[in-house]
Length: 141
Image (cartoon, rainbow, N blue to C red; front, side, top):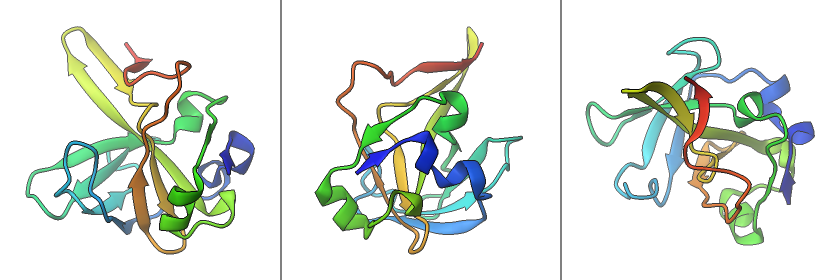
């Protein structure tokens, strides 16, 4: 299943506050499984993914199709099945942002998108094997 801007629900469907469960946790943080997505909590198009499993953990996330309109990738059958996704329109795609102070810049991890089934709130982080994208794609400098 290909995820591309034409099928991305985040372009046409407003992101709403909701619970998201990552059954396997996030890569490098397997105990961070349960989150609340707070839309535009950090400004226009910048959302907060607040961890419910560990106090004080929150990630800035954004719609990758706003950052890079040509962003596109394949979801493997096992990932689609694990999330219960049968239609690309059921997928909310987010990427984690990093804010650096010196030098001041915001980057996006386009290699590790977060996928969420819009109907169930189940999520999974992928690792893309692409030389087109970066874990530190500059969003703002």
